[in-house]
Length: 116
Image 1 (cartoon, rainbow, N blue to C red):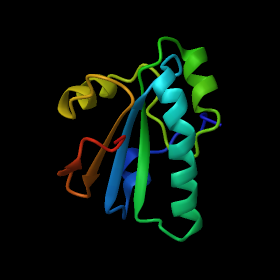
Image 2: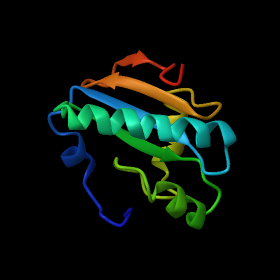
Image 3: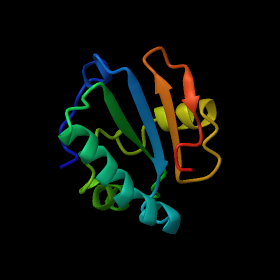
Image 4: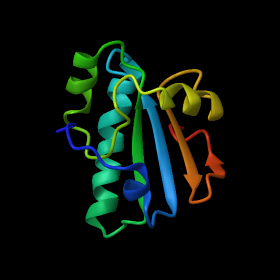
């Protein structure tokens, strides 16, 4: 429901693969891609794949849009307005959205083209 707060270390503990999904409610390509990503995520978890996690990094313009957009998301989300968004966006070159970056447990980039 977006109100549960989890420490990053707990959310990522034991994960071999981490996906960072940069997206926003107001973005039409994001609105088309997000349901597909939710389906993929749920399918992987349903098939026992628990060694990965996806973290949503919001580029929403206000907290109401953020809450509406994240209400159906099954994965952890950075809090709305988090300074970490800008740091991650620069580090992983999120110049356009949707943008999906996949990294290993050491933070090494596997791909920055996860949307493709």
